[in-house]
Image (cartoon, rainbow, N blue to C red; front, top):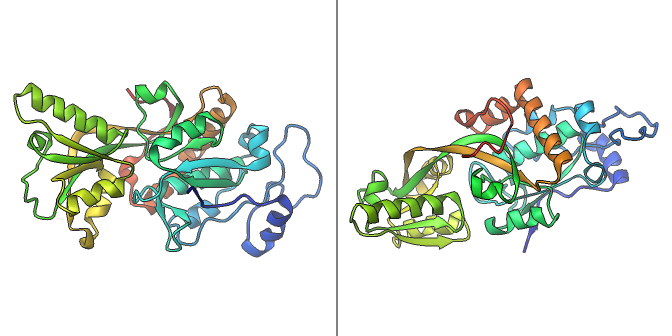
Length: 319
């Protein structure tokens, strides 16, 4: 079942919440109706208190020019966004088990505030996310998704970070895995249909080319299931994004250690329906504004992810 993380409220309830939550209105309380084409008055939801970047997010004010260019449906109903929780530090649940926090939700809320709208973030398994965007159920997907040519055939990306992959192995590395060549003849768990699966298949092809034993690739719907195969001893390694691997390796209860896979860096993108050009321009403009203002850098810093920074919002930069 999909989990609703943050619900966009009716306008009257939002205005009432402004006084209680200190939310910011686009017109600073002006009562006049907005002119045609202007952004409507919206009381913006505050960031969750557990969000490490909450202070940064709550200090962001809408950009009037960007807000005016937001598609009418988004102005009226807010952004509908899909992600996949359980991928720290990028996307995780708060202590209540239902509130989305992490860098991807933080950037999503920052973009929404820059555009002067509220946002609903829905938790979906990875393979359902792009179809949900293409059918119009969601406005965009932001879920540590690698921008690559194959996916560009379905969605248009606005690239927001650049990151590489890594391996997770049991603490002490009993299988002696130090890099891709050591995976030949071993069992590796991955997220089905993700960039980690593509890497595993590439490494398997290299093993075959070198005349070595093939890699037994186990595919799962989510990162957590893939990790359990390592901790349970069924797989000798799992491939994931290095930022996630490092985060999990920092938790002694998991009993794993991280190994960086050099040369795997690529952009991650916010994916949108290609013909939704007005929204693509709005999201790109908001991200560029956050980068120029330094707010983007502060969001990354809050989650200790400064190394992932990009210098500008690029469209479909994955090669």
